[in-house]
Amino acid sequence: MSFNPPRHRRLPRRRPPPFPAGSSPAPSPPRNGPASPPTGAPHLARIADFDTVGAAFISHFHRALDMAPVRALRARGTPVLCWTVRSPAEEAAARARGATNVTFEGYLPDPG
Image 1 (cartoon, rainbow, N blue to C red):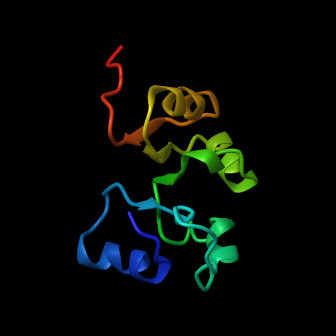
Image 2: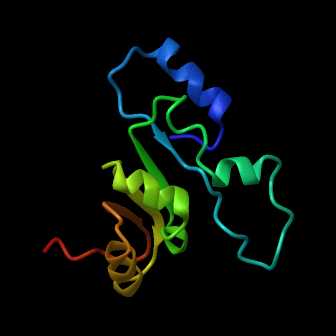
Image 3: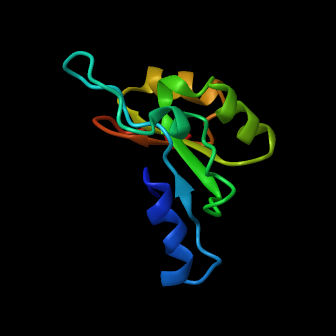
């Protein structure tokens, strides 16, 4: 999984497919106030490199699962993982918005 599409594109040369390559297109928001977006953030937010890097899934910020590019990939059947979920309520909300699975921290999810 990578935030960096150029590095992501080099993965198949280092390890031949099939392998699960994922794209993390949106860095998490800062915890201590606003910050300048990283260079290329609008391009990353469009998830424009998903097909060209050979990604098989995305891992996206759990509060941004309603973004149009995420919805479009989910409609194609792409698994949508999300991060970093810190409570059962956040997990339930993410799953209600279509998360296939979650990366959790600070609690144990219900194995249900």
